[in-house]
Length: 319
Ligand code: F6P
Image (cartoon, rainbow, N blue to C red; front, side, top):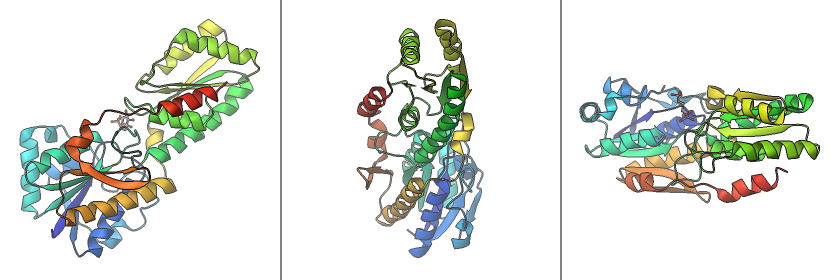
């Protein structure tokens, strides 16, 4: 292993820069040449590859987004695209590739490993939807971004004695809604893993009002969606004013939290170690506070987890 490359792919996540920095500086520490690939697999196919040094990653640990840029490539999903990408890596003399991204990016790493490229995946997504790891890089920051929005919405919800419905990202995973909802003291958390009943929701809102609740915060995961429709229905049934807020891409930006920077640094460091150990087609994660790695196929086959206990705690504390 003499030359490795790093790319970020899929949706950007806060902490990706800290991971890039860790990969680059660990590589240089271990006398490897390290290349940056711009715009994910799409840039790889176009040969957007450049050599990186310590200064290339200076002043980025605190920045959201990804300095390598990112993209979702359709061409790379085809066999022809994957063959081309592997040929380009060979042409550049790249022996190992670190892919930072979510499950789509891991499928890409998995495909390249079948063409003989040594690949390691680092989980970077705000969704926390990779079952094999307790946390993905960017999730903690996104939870805090949503929490900040919830805190602000609570002020206006209380002042007007209105219901506030907040729709958060996460694809089919309810973790962002669940964690931010619990931390923000939400009255109801609606996630795809549990679903909801509009009549029970309205009844809960009315009961809360009778008990003297002045605000009502409802967090809806985008996997369920329909915040505007829920607001309309709640207003119709309960007679209480309701407003929907769809947080959108604001959840993807911002300076990463200490937790995300530390996780990114640990995983970036370990990714280079694994390549030096000759490992390939593995993904990194964290379980019970310990860094773990496992086979990509195995990792992607694990069924989605849902923290029912956390959900029950949030429900019990919401009255
Ligand atoms: O995977 C991250 C994520 O922000 C999801 O939560 C969301 O569903 C999706 O990406 C949005 O994708 P795009 O940025 O392409 O609109």
